Length: 473
DNA sequence: TAGCTCGTTGGACAA
DNA sequence: TTTGTCCAACGAGCT
Image 1 (tube, rainbow, N blue to C red):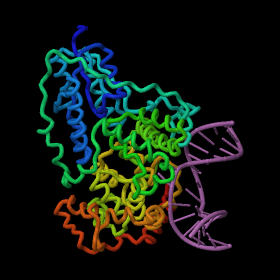
Image 2 (cartoon, protein in one colour):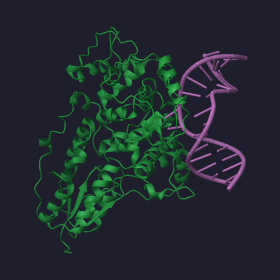
Image 3 (cartoon, rainbow, N blue to C red):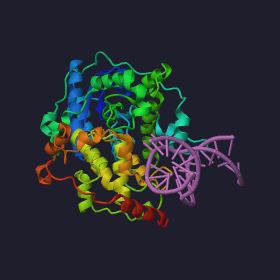
Image 4 (cartoon, rainbow, N blue to C red):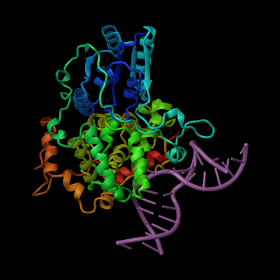
């Protein structure tokens, strides 16, 4: 191998310089580094919001690299073809990328590796997305974990490698390969909602992510355990957005979270536990990839869920006009900000899969279209957990009551008033912004009456209880 | 191996 | 208003 030929860093969902083992691996080769992002069919089939948000993150990361005298090369096409072409153009003999764990990406990456290796290129993935590789956590009988608590107990005292410093410079090639212009890809086009409105609520880039973490660990972490369930309060870190695109590493959250634990900050352990939930989701998606599109538990594919997303009640759910304030508030929050509070996610999912007896896949797909923190593993696990088809022994009678949930966790109606405009003489700007964000074709206006519930709560609950109890598997 | 304990996030109802 | 109890049954994981 020529000593001077470059290494290609195939950039995907790890848009950061700090604590980036892929970048570190490239640096250690001593070669010039060519960072490249490829818009391939995996990215092109992302939901509207994730695609748009990823584009913003990638464009921002290109600027970060520019500041180091480097670049981010943008190309479009089949990943394997693009990488082979780039190797031919630049003489690169090494390709590195951050390892993925979901079935779609695993399939693509396996093919890329085979194709490149067959051409004599040294192609390797590097662990950068998780704290623990899914196969490195095993039960005492050598199987994977299916329940969170034992998983947590298995890893909570483990040693985790130190953080890697961000480089201050990158070795650049004598000649850069040509790049497309990401702006020409129009990644915001599928956003049929007002991207400009959602843009007010997002937080792009590595520096912003780090600020977010520092702010959270300084103050909010102290009340995290007690206040995180209240959707009207700014009690959570909201780092899921940055974690999803690799603008901050899970390992950094682990280490700084542990530092906060050592400093005696209440809630810090709970925060680390939440980071580990993400690890658990990846543990599951790796060992049971069918979790993304099939009911995880045997037999649940036969459950009598409605799977017609044109039904009027499903449309009401998606357009946040179910007549259930907590459900509508949450769905509007997601539509306007690209984010939804964790408790709200459970409540809307429970209402869809239980009261409405609608398949979790419909909710999963809507979340994939709307979330700026969309993550294939967390989304699949979350939906199946709530639906009861997933990895959890939740009793079937555990059905969230969105009215009592709102009374319990939004007693002062802060969250409700933030997102529901109908019926109020002086609605909040955020509540009104929902009506500005939605497509005109939805025909929504804040002056309309607030709708009656599409499914009355006692009826829906009883119907779900009956169906769950009578299931024949 | 058999037995034991436990299961992120609940609701309804009675006291 | 708050607290305790029950709502089934099962499978995971450990000892």
